[in-house]
Image 1 (cartoon, rainbow, N blue to C red):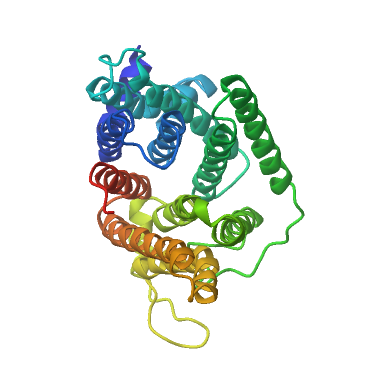
Image 2: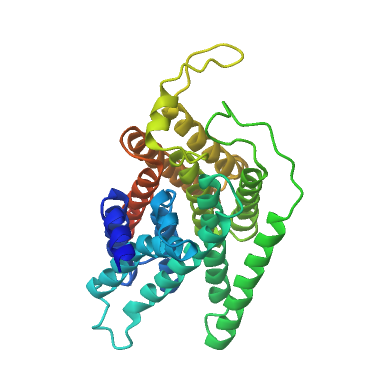
Length: 372
């Protein structure tokens, strides 16, 4: 009991906990209101739960937790963090207009998916942090796999929407295939690359980051070919895939220092006048945020830019490519602004939670008040 009280007291002092709580309340409430466009309600809840679980677990667990009882204390520390989005999701489901008043309690479908997403992403974080040294790579890996599972399940359900039994089997098959693909990619022999940019605090060239970027580029190319050329009626799926990959790859790298330095060490390194080999001005932490956001925006946006150039004469088909580019640019701008501000005043875990919370709020506004 004393250990649980200590851990809850530690988490209650983190602003990230309250950001995740509020984002969960609003996100699940909107998802349960019937306005959650872009996918089935349960899948939307699953993706929200996964994002917010990773945001809650973004920063390393406080060191004292490891000395209060070994692995049991470490697991208790994880539960003390993910209880915040779980509580927020439950409150959001109760506050949703389609909650208990629905005849079939359909308003609670997003909550069911949300709870599955929280548990799935939290298990991934616990699993990956034992194998990867970079906390940013852990968060990105958990987000990529969670997004892949959720989007694959949504596609399978849409394919067999008229038959619930066939749809359930297809969803299960899609989940297993996605997880199997993640295992195959994780075991691919990939040599360490040359560090990107300054190579000081982000993109250290480790194979894990190379695999993640490779998955993002492959998803962007596949979305461009399938959704913009072969099946232009599904152009919205290209936007969802591109933004999901951007959030998974860019947000953790722009907010969490991969070597898990504390706030004091990060500020100290910001003040070091690093001079590149070819000369030039000092590169600080904020420049590294811009580097990560810009790199991933270009990595995931260039296929849609190419499609836009090739489809210039076709206004209807080029609109899908243009919408993807615009949505990626807007997401990148929001990420850069919030991450830059957060890195000045908070630790990496809080900055990650702030960016994801703001993106959830923007999604809520767009869904509630459609722009088109």
